[in-house]
Amino acid sequence: MLPYVSLPDRLVQAGVELLEEDGLADLTLRAIARRTGVSHGAPRRYFPTHDALLAAIAATGLQDLAARLGTPTDGPPEEQLVVAARNYLQFAAERPGMFDLIFRHDLLAGAGGNLRATSLPLFQNFVDLVAQLHPADAALRATALWTNIHGLATLRATNALELLGTTDLEPIIRYVVHSHLH
Image 1 (cartoon, helix red, strand yellow):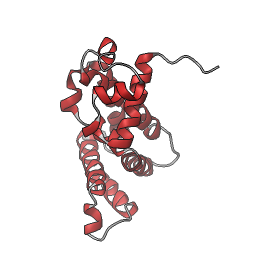
Image 2 (tube, rainbow, N blue to C red):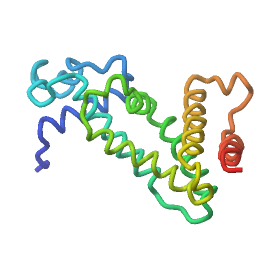
Image 3 (cartoon, rainbow, N blue to C red):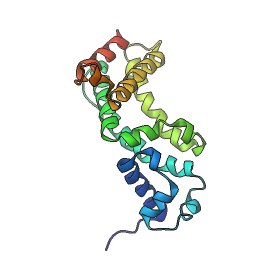
Image 4 (cartoon, one colour):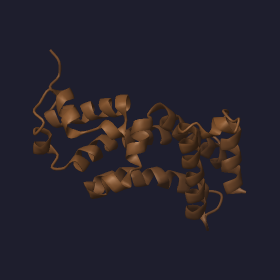
């Protein structure tokens, strides 16, 4: 016998599947309800707004990203940041729809503090690693580093790096991390 899965959890899972298959633009309450096999009004019983359901879907992606970034590695902080950047870019490449959603703060702003409680520690990991080398301006350096890595993810997603003749991100990752630490 299959384990019981609550309707809210089924709605979130259907949303994750649709997001991965079709992207954010086609992620509607009706599509999620259809995938789940319930009436189009049923999701509103558990998620009062479309944004609330999107936030629940995004929370699953943030948990995945947190697991990838939170995996400790041995070595100096600079190498740990390279690994974290690599994992961040891998997540963006493997789950582009989810990557888009978790950074759509305009959509997710009204979803409450739970989403921020999941997302802020991800950035704090970068700050903590940078602080081992530069405690005085760790937040500034970590913000600049994260901005660069996020930009790389976006440029790769739009094939802009290929237009420049660059497909190997490893030297770019290492250069970006090094440049923000030295």
